[in-house]
Amino acid sequence: MLRRESDGKQNSFGDLTRAARSVPQKHVLLQMKRAVDWAAVEQKLAVYYAVGEGRPSWPPAVLVRMLVLEEYAELSDRQVSEQVAYNLLYRSFVGLGVDEAVPDDTTLVTFRARIGEQGVRELFDELNERWREAGLIADEHRVLDGSHIWANVARRSWVSLMRRGRRLVVEAVAGVDDGRAKELASRFVPGAGEKEPRGEEALHQERQRTQELLEAVKEVKDPRVRERADLLQAMLADNDRPVSFEDPDARWGHKREDFAFLGYKTHEAIDPESRMITAVDVLPGNANEAVRSDVLLRQEKSVVASGVTVIGDALYNNATTIKQVERAGGRACFAGLRAERISDGFRYDAEADWMVCAEGKHSIGKIRVNNGDMYYFSMHDCRDCPRRAECLTSGERYGKARARRRVYLSEVRKRKLLAGEAGHAWRKECLRLRGGIESKFDEQMNRHGLRRARYWGLAKMRIQVLLNAMTVNLKRAVKLLMRRAAGPPCALAMAAGG
Image 1: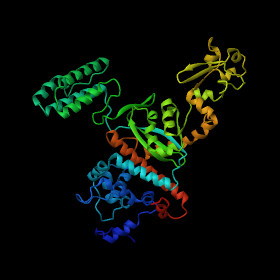
Image 2: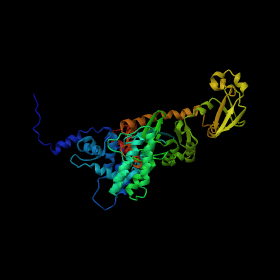
Image 3: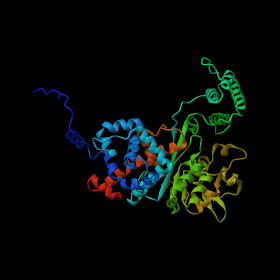
Image 4: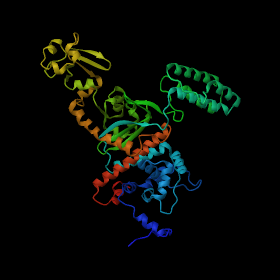
């Protein structure tokens, strides 16, 4: 029998209630909600509100879950407010009844500004402490790694940047002295139809015109003029220069020699056993995250001080990072540089202070090189050695002055050899733990929108990355708890201490 569409009768409250009951309770979002003691979250964030002043606020737990939902579903403030209004699953996760109003995007902006980076970081640490108490986060190893984030700005040439900068400075001057601004515009601001010049000569001319404008406005004390002029001046620097007026903290960086990006780097510490993120930092794109590892180590001071093994790729294998790990009380295990991989095939005799090769021959001397020693073997021994073809490089085999094996051993490496913490076997055992963390960055970048920045500025970018890490940690915690628990998902809160 043909069934006709309803006559448009408005749904009753009972209809809406029955629809809400149809939301799948096993959905990961609702499991994430049940896995957290949200009363503790509200208590943690209560210090950011004035007691007894102003209108009653939205419950902080509701707003936090909306921010988590943004990261989970790659939504903006406006989009998450719209979708919570009609998506019953999202509404149930956020904790709103079917007939309750929804916080708008302005409320989310205000809330994020209220608690700031400090509040979000405190919340991130609080949840991680809960996961640690539940036995989800282990404290034996930490893997350090980073990835890039594209800034939410247009990528401009240097000529285009300087032209735009001069226009912005002149516009600021117009707010103080319109006549002066018109005179400066005639001299320094290109016309609307004027094409952008190219080449070294054009760059030189644009720099010169920019410097002349900055000289012409140096006596103007207006704050807006000074702010724009100072930023434009910084763009003329030779090193660490801003590349955007909208986001002056963003920088050009390189993931490898043939891949450049404009934006930031996220630097994270991950427990390889649980694959949960335990510490977060964000740096400009041109920064070397390895030598800033102490920022992550300070976030986990008590854990690292207990002797945790800190693991990383060859980027971290430098004296600065190793000292940071050792000062914090941890043990460094970083992928070997080429010189260290070579030294794995030799044995160091500390008593005699020489290197011994696989044929039992020892080095006959050493030369101090940087922060270590270069041990060299006898030319006679190497020339007649049966392993000559596989042991010596082509330069060592055929060079007149270098027909001998040379092995470099840094002071850091030497200490690790003496302590039994170096060599192929130990490093391989630790470094194999690195394999599981690449999927974590893939999850953050490709599933939860961390490939591109939402905001401008380092402080706001740290908030984005912390919220993103909090979201993927919630997902991971639910999965780990489900593996452990024999009972239904509603038992997860008790298992997590919630």
